Amino acid sequence: MNVKSLWVIAAAVLSIGVAACEKKGPLEQAGEEVDEAVDTMKRGGEESTENKVDDAMDEARDAVDELKEE
Image 1 (cartoon, rainbow, N blue to C red):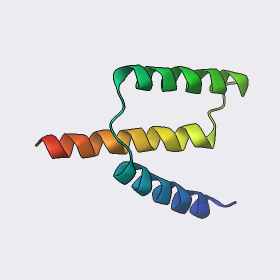
Image 2: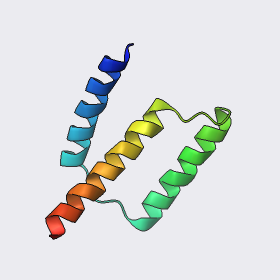
Image 3: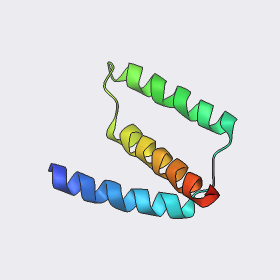
């Protein structure tokens, strides 16, 4: 899979995720961060593509929430 395809897939997942997901509570977010850290440690310090996309979705969701508050 080339980089362009990865970005297209990430953008599609991101747009669907931002539109469909509710805001995560603090405990849910903390649990997710712990899960990602454990997964990264299991992979020898390399973060998976899934975790990278999930982080991007979280950042986009936070940015949308900030814009809604303005």
